[in-house]
Image (tube, rainbow, N blue to C red; front, side, top):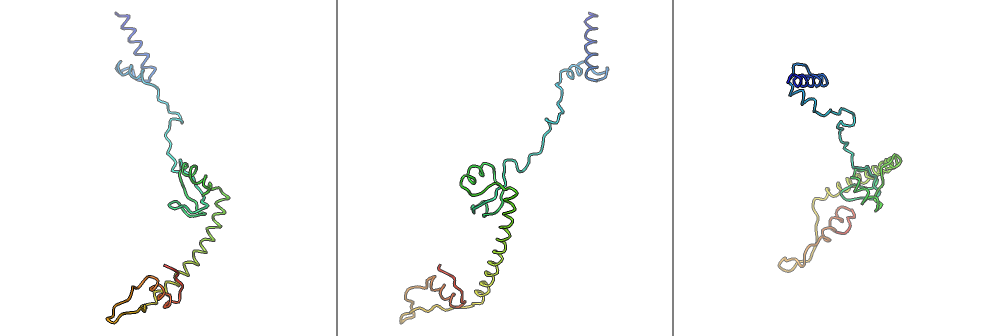
Length: 170
């Protein structure tokens, strides 16, 4: 009985020394600490932030895609959309350094064209706002009743005549 007590004491003492706990700790806590698995604190166990670009690619579009972007524009799309839709149909390519430089040149040219179009649109807007009233001439009957109706082409013709612009067909 004294030898079994000494054996238990030596086991508890050895467990306390192995885990670095004090001699005064209870035998239960030492035995639990002795059974606990070592904690791996290596670099491979650390959690890293997930990149917002994970699973996505920057793509330079060569054609306009509704809901995605215009041609010569750099957009970010999912890898699967690029590999399964854009690339096989020839709608775009990966945005490399050369492709981005070329896109910058095209974007500058497009900005100049857009500025010219915007200036022409402002001029047309001013001409159309200058028209306050216009008249559409139609035949009427004896009791001032209109024969037929006033169509869109009639109104368009009267506006073109009053403004001097060519608006096109409706």
